[in-house]
Length: 430
Image (tube, rainbow, N blue to C red):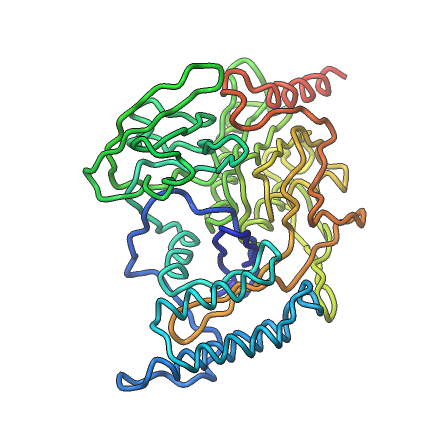
């Protein structure tokens, strides 16, 4: 699977043979290595190191293959303005001089980051293993149970999600709250400290939109991510609300199917609101599965240096999901395959979009695993939607622009959601 952002993590084509888009930073919790996580080396044309082999020889093999993968597969023949051969020559000389594993993984990360496409990334074996666990729904961590997004212009970090029954939830933290400080330090300088040993505590300064800052003490504990799809159906309406949090988890499509089935069992559905405002992408496997609940056929093309391939889905109708009116909520955090999901449904006239412009991060990255368990995610494809527009860099533009950052409102004052519901109610009265 493919797509990464500067501080993002990629996912999964290693197991599916498909690309994937990577969301922005992984949720703030410390990964616990999962013994059952699978790291599948890419080709087997590289010799297996022996216990007595010098690390430098292994490093050079990994480097040479990484260099060739970028040289031959990178989406942009000009390497996005970087002199890749020159950069490679300097890097290889450094590697040949000898490095520790830690130094090598850092150097490779810095080298790939110079492509500056906001997607391509190099992962150490530990980071690659964590990605595998996320893909398979096996990721567990120790922290307070939140997903955050930095707001550098405000000096804060907003809570995109607070996991139910997590330490953060138990002390009253909720999505849309902003973190100001952690143990007295500016939050943007200490965000990584939300993770830590179980039983240890931290003090946060928190601000709910429209309220004064307050302090809370939270004790870190093991946490588990919530399901990828959250559903709600107001008792008095035939409108369904679906929050699709991620396309990373391979269970996203099946989770959506169950939610639609459960909601449909309760009676007629006249419209569906799909909330993608905190969805930062994932795998093509999940994208296709979810798209198939609402559309059918070829919905665009992934383009690369030597050709293109279709984004083709096979539609499955669940209680009228192929024809029910759709409104999709998008915003600043909506990225990668979440953008493609919203954009293609808008392009074919299947859905109206409400909110603000998305990230503009729709290149597809493909994973390449190395003998030591490290992994390169490289931008190898762009995307061309049915209407031919280019969303890379510009983002997907909503049909109805409703201003507001996730940190500006609460669940009770969400005018973007109110607008979406009203559009569906008006459509139902016609």
